[in-house]
Length: 497
Image (cartoon, rainbow, N blue to C red; front, side):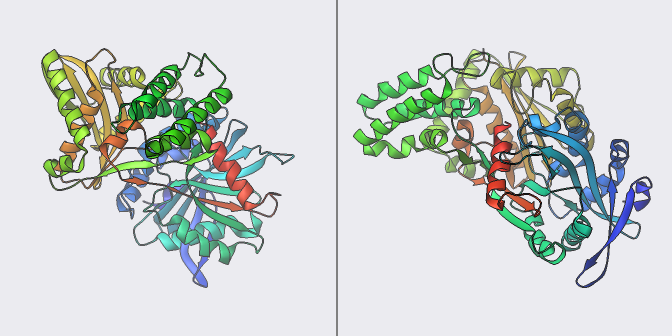
């Protein structure tokens, strides 16, 4: 990646690494058109990166900025943004160069964020992207140069107490990422003594949010169907689950969320008190409703050597369910599978995927809605051109009744968008994702990443989860403790969803 690509970038600074003038210099890109022109060199750097994170590719980061980041409010109105009281101020991409070679990219933006207890907004530096569209965010660094680049970034941002930011929030760092760990000593060396930093796990908002409501309803029904649930409690749980429906506005028509949440918790507490053996069954829905913030889990399937090995890892109930689903579909007509890759049609294939996805999760989907359609189309087209896209359709009597969009990169398959036709018998969504797992095993991949949110179907497919890391840095100019700031920013990150 040639540094000459940056002819219109802002002036550079030189970082001191290990007590000497380091080889890595930092140049800034604040122009969206220049960001687009970085595509060829960005691709080369992505191929040399020290970890196989498909979401750091230009094919994801640039379309996100182009369609989401530049909107009024930008990522503030997205899950992974920093609340609807924030707004995007500027693009701020830091490029690390060593002579004519670019060894690292920190894809950043500056947001103006309003927080409780502060008289005016603060400037928060954060990574481009959000939880549900670009999933794992990070610095993109050539393998073996991570320490130098991270050091250079913080030396640059801390020079003369850079007035362009009050806090830096690096969210959704994959557990394989070295960024947070390497940042701690770099900040101690280059930041003022008053600088504060904290690392913490990712969280989501608790309570009766529309997303949690769906999970609570599913958990109640599953608990009611369990053989461990006494008959006396079974009917109460089924009745309660039946009341948890959303209207067109995403709220429950029966009661406002707060009283309804309290009523659900009272029923769950009574059942657990009368039948202590049900405590484990009811722990999940109670935890979602009771806690203000809940860990955001990223389920993944560690792929064994064979499909038979994977099936043995599933519960007997899940294996029976998959067989039953396939049998029901087969009895309904001719069943066939179709895979689209580099031949992806941005019209027909995308329209079918969007239709099936909306049928499953509704118009307010966190991953595909009216705000994100253009971005998702561009990402799918870009990944198809790179050979990463694996878009599968399940056909019943020739009609597409389920879809699953995955990206294959390195040793991982990332499941990104799933959808099904509500009129299809059984659960074609489970069938198509099971097939994607079987196919990934046959290709020799090591992991299938299911994406954020430990929703019910994911719990059937795997018990393995990761929790991403976050790094928060605060200057003395922010009159909040690092703990209070972390709580507010992380809570707003979740509430934006």
